[in-house]
Length: 137
Image (cartoon, rainbow, N blue to C red; front, top):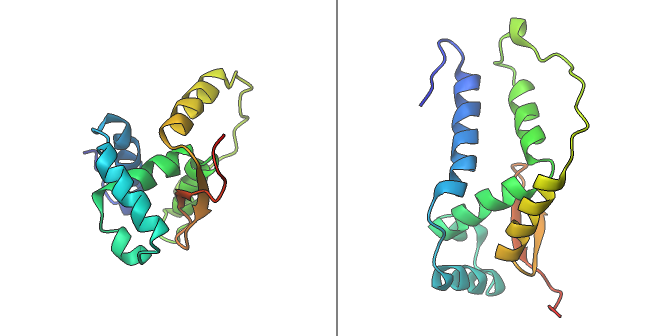
């Protein structure tokens, strides 16, 4: 893993991004494990207990990446931290107007893997997808 001298916030940011994007390279949980997680949600199992489940962690990281604002919010959280070096503040840049077709395709793939789910924002600012009350067609 990459480490930066005297930059603990940058180290923490890189670590969080690495863990989040690693979910794309991990073996997905089995259907059985996903069904157990869904049963835990519908059975109102306490969130602190569910957070101990590897399937919950996997699903949460997928959900974070699927949330439109997650990446920007993550960068802002680290940039706004008091320990960020004052000489290393962000500078504004124009955002390009490239096509969003690839993102739309990827989003469609994610949504197929997570049917009938809705997003729920947790107190730490991250996102979690939970079973939807809506019935499929």
